[in-house]
Amino acid sequence: MVDSAWQSFAKSIGRESLPRLTDSASRKLAVTTHRESGASREEQEALASHMTHSVNTADRYYNKAFRKEERGKAIAKITSTYRAKARDMAESGKEVGMPPP
Image (tube, rainbow, N blue to C red; front, side, top):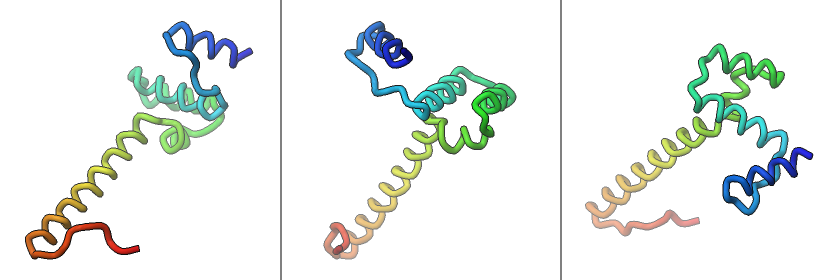
């Protein structure tokens, strides 16, 4: 029943289908949407309580916007470090490339 309603929603927004709505996906959707709507920490705690976990669990596992932002920061750091290393190697005349396996 839930899956058919979920797929009907997909069609209403112009999508052929959406990924299966699992428990985890449902929690992620609820937490992310709730936070993106500007929910206060108190409201976040109320939702976490309703979901029978702590707001810290939501912070770690379900807040997709935060996870995406943190992943972006990590990728940017790795990229800038690699570029700096490549620049230093090029300036010293060493071959730039990937380290051997």
